[in-house]
Length: 282
Length: 321
Ligand SMILES: [Zn+2]
Image: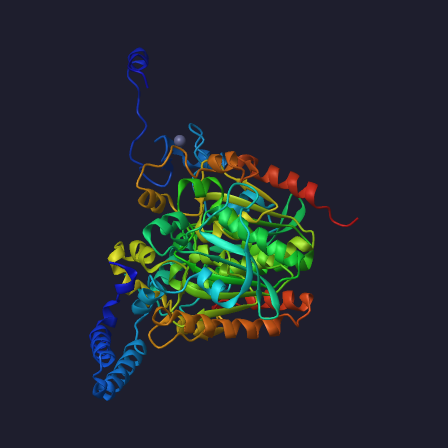
């Protein structure tokens, strides 16, 4: 803010800088303190700067699926530890902590629900569950979501948020890219629509498989997208990365995203696209 | 250090013996034929020692073997195993990516399309080849060649040896993730047999982007992983120097991958690794590839695709409640 404005306005009553309790949230981007109920009404988008707060998989269901129509599938599918993987802690300990934190069994919720009265196979990833990483369980759930769309001849919508493959499952996690990517060939050949929604962040193994394979790809504004992480690229090339590199807007400019949709328009855009691409038999 | 004199740490006990044999052979050449039995004994000792060392390699040792600068690369296999290779260039969209080579060739009675990343033998070549790390146009060139193969009914042979897809600004601008995803998808529906041979390094999505097929062979000392040991160490241990630990945790060697069911067969290497006898290594893999060509070309394309999809559908280990 320019200095003279400050002067003209006189003393300003500052909102609390610390977020005192569960009622207020602070925007990471502009620092604005926002009343949470107001934020929820605004789809968790900062009213001041438009920054999209990261939200949970369950919140995407609330925002995108017609109330009361969502039926979850495959909730019981979970990860195991086939490699007995231990880094700073054993993989089962990480899994347990993630389950407790997110109240989910895996980094994705899958099911059937309506978008503006059209039944779709819907999946939303949960970044809070080990960075939304893809292991065998997640790959299986995505594959079943594809198959559900195929069996019921309905569209598929996947909302992605992921740091990539789950290293703790090594080669098994890598192969989930092939498992999900090849499963989508059957959906494609059946002429059924698949819309991929990219949220902050969607990178690496998920971005290099099903997230990039939508008939239409929608990104939320300002999401970090890409194959390699910015830190890895910076270390490899030994120079600063350009402003806005690997953002949704960057990928729109370079032709890898069809449209950027603010969250409050996401359902409307999905509904329009699905209606256009898909009509149930009359 | 030239690659001719390059030795891995655990190969050191062999160097002295090799030198001793060489010295005695020089003496024999100048007339001291009474040394022949001594040479024979030393050679036996050398082979025994070699089998002992190479029979007990750790995962990290194998990573070193897979990266050996004298290990055979894609073009070496093509030269040894195939005839009439016609290299084809370019993705028809942006440029030719020299990190990957490919083209038509003949192998035995089969006409084939052969594709694979290519590493350089020296610094100059490696800069040109980008160390076998592809940009998106490399994956798109591969896909173009896969489609040509489909059109002309050639089975596809893929050799995999890459430290990964290149992480750079231009690679992102041109859609590295999309290029890999597209290849995985399209390789799921190409209507000719695809035979994959992992001959060296199989790093991450960079390898999988040319790695979906009907049969996956893996050389004894090759490695295949979701991330390089160094990359994993940097993330999980916050220290690239912990790569040895990461290679053990990731279980990246051929017997591990076979046990997890993610490859079909291990192809043995000569006793001292492929670099100790490249021609023998090339021939050993060649025999396996011919067997697969003979088998897969008899299968009806619809059935082949069904089997391929089923193969990938079943990959993974999880619990269902
Ligand atoms: Zn803000």
